[in-house]
Image 1 (cartoon, rainbow, N blue to C red):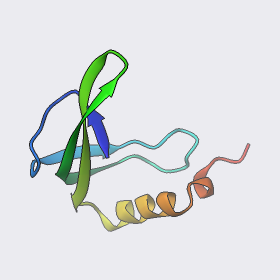
Image 2 (cartoon, rainbow, N blue to C red; image 1 turned 90 degrees about the vertical axis):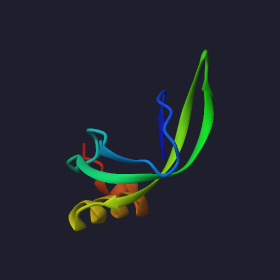
Image 3 (cartoon, rainbow, N blue to C red; image 1 turned 30 degrees about the vertical axis):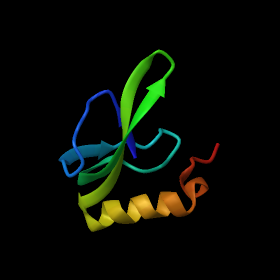
Image 4 (tube, rainbow, N blue to C red; image 1 turned 45 degrees about the vertical axis):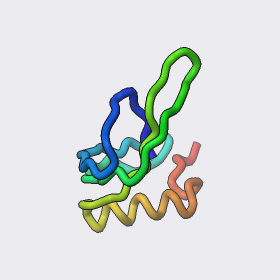
Length: 80
């Protein structure tokens, strides 16, 4: 899911960059996704949109990274 001020129709293909927090030991990656649902979303004093995405093109390694962090986010935190 993404949130943005820009309105885009369902079915639109977009290029995205997935950014991980610094405390996660994974590099960012780029992928192509398709918008599969959309909803209007209100934040404080402005209105924007939420979109559900389906990955269309993603490397095997980046797909693995994404699934691993979704399965267990604590695995990738840096040890302090």
